[in-house]
Length: 339
Ligand SMILES: NC(=O)c1ccc[n+]([C@@H]2O[C@H](COP(=O)([O-])OP(=O)(O)OC[C@H]3O[C@@H](n4cnc5c(N)ncnc54)[C@H](O)[C@@H]3O)[C@@H](O)[C@H]2O)c1
Ligand SMILES: O=C(O)C[C@H](O)C(=O)O
Image 1: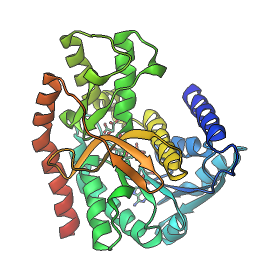
Image 2: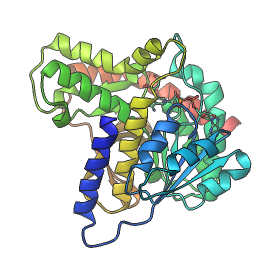
Image 3: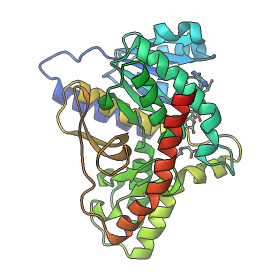
């Protein structure tokens, strides 16, 4: 699997460079939903990450098998599997990073918001346990609809008196991964060198790739930029339709989730200038949560970076996404406070 091998090599290179004179710190990573379509390949990729010393794999069922399988890989981390709510406390205790891909995925014809009724309750329960057993962990929220599940988690943590806005992240890395891939194809540049910020949220038009800031620059015509924007916004649906009822993106999401968790671990370990896009508490716009570039540090979010210069097309996109994103955020907050 080329992406995971290159991910491991790049992580190992950075690790060697950054920790040459000191030991790599111990870090526990917990994956909640580890037996699922994302959870299994994500567990594999986290097992390949040398920054992880303890890998905790939790699901309602099926995790002993996944953990036994992954544990045979000859890398640094010690792997433990936990199944069922009785074992959730143990799974979480001492975790530095908790990655949450627990919940149902879309089928063709559904929006991410159609998952709200089931996933909101799952996320609420898991976040309440995080507040109790590992309140200092960085939370990487993958479960959809991210535009609502992140606000739900924030409210649950607030109610428990454990909310720290620097430690809660909606994972939007897959949007960045897609934007990079699609841009490289059209611009005919080396995909490994491409950077494209993606801001806003993680659903349809709330996903706003900023191709005007893409590097290497390519001066693509407006109709191509429009088509690239639409393809990035519809990337999840493209996969859902191709899988024809068998779920949504799992492998590319596992890759994206592993990249983001790796960035969080590097930040925690004091590696300088770790910047990734993420959906976080924000004052970049008037909305309380917004995805933009974030500098990661020893306490999680070190700095939420601004949007930079936008093209007229992107300015329009930004105004158009706000009502939907606002409604999704409010829906999450209302759910958390009523249930
Ligand atoms: N943020 C993103 O970019 C992104 C990308 C892809 C998918 N997703 C979302 O990720 C979620 C998972 O997708 P998937 O394809 O892995 O689904 P899946 O059904 O294959 O796996 C989900 C797993 O969650 C587990 N689960 C359910 N309730 C749980 C609970 N209370 N505690 C622990 N585990 C629980 C299930 O047992 C299952 O193993 C979906 O909501 C999907 O929409 C997000
Ligand atoms: O599209 C989905 O439902 C899953 C995920 O949010 C994605 O972007 O692939």
